[in-house]
Length: 602
Image 1 (tube, one colour):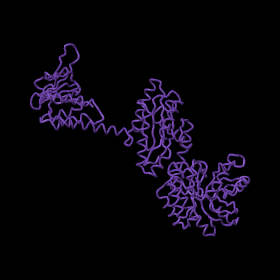
Image 2 (cartoon, rainbow, N blue to C red; image 1 turned 90 degrees about the vertical axis):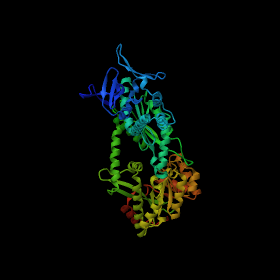
Image 3 (tube, rainbow, N blue to C red; image 1 turned 90 degrees about the horizontal axis):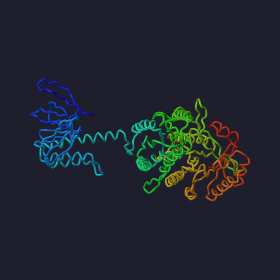
Image 4 (cartoon, one colour; image 1 turned 45 degrees about the horizontal axis):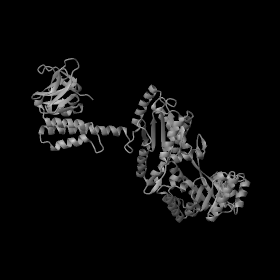
């Protein structure tokens, strides 16, 4: 901001008005506390303390040269070091006189120092702030009190300038990654839109989020997550161009503004490049960590005419990619808005479902093929919404996992299932209840303690509880999983690997896990009697479980043909609609009492 100087033409009359400091070329001391202010074409009187002028006008370029004058360095035309004369800017027009600071009043070494300061301020390097270093040196080595005071004033002003620059930088940049933040990004988008209209460009926004990044923060700590974000920011900067803007939007969300793309295929190439960079391994104490990205893409002007709309639509497309399993990209389409609103509505209600007593536990019988007895049941969570009715688990379970609500819901299901099984035990039914455990639950540091507390609170013996973890959970942080499984087995709890065959399990790891039951996914059972490949896979899985001394359990059995196939191959246990659909506790109990099925073994 340009400073205003209070000046007058007549000291005695005192009619004061202001002029811009940028119009001033120099200020001369006439007598004590009275100064003559020179512009290029005029001069005025200034009644102000000389000691304060330099510091006050430092940012505008004014420097004290000796005890009698201050010069605006922005108006310096030349400096004759031999004669000690500084030439200042002249007013426009023929014959205009050029003003100068006279040789008699100039301290030569001080002027040389001023010129060094001007040069240092225009220069930057990797070793710090050149001007700050120079001012520190001049302040400590100069023995002239007048100039030491001048250098000190300059130093204070320079420190203020650097502090303000740092504050300004922090206001517009992310503290962790040093990338532009949301505020600066939106300013860049606005400017980009203006240029796009002028030059017929087509900007694109890539909004991306790291898949399952919360698991890393929860299991290894936020310091590890922060280190990953810092490294990722550097990697991403390597694929951006100077005209692009890459920002950290929030948490593990990043956003990339590309000023122009020729078509969708070019934007798709950028998205694939992001996915490639994100998926590179991250080393943590010798252990490789992996994440993937869900990416949404929107284009100006067809997907939005203002920054907020374009960003929102890219965000919407990103969530669609995440809903499809992540590690992919999606272009925005207007139809996604309805889906996003529906998802937001569902999430809002899901967060309140537990407190509003809308979560239910249903039970599906597990049948022993060797004797046909029900030996247990799987506890399956259901959401009974007062308006939507029974919400499909396929709808709300992924949402619960993504939002973290799965942990309190999962712990509630665990406690409810154990409590119900204890009631049935007291009624004479010896059944093993099988409870699904999410990745967030299993990876939690207090998971084993939670199991112990639940068993103690409900009074259920550990042998009558089985915990189901999916193949994908088992293969995340294998050493941690193995240690946890061993702790649970020492307690006496049974362990099952669920959905086996759908992921990327290593048989050597499976052998080391030594779980009790291998559950064969329903996707293989569905066509087991009509598809040779599925039949071969199921046969191999049953044989493998026998070799590893594990029980095999087939999910989703619906026909007699499927049941006969499994029995002939030596499958131990089954569950599915051929016996019963999942039932509320009251109906399941009624089924047990009606059929008088003999008790099985855990």
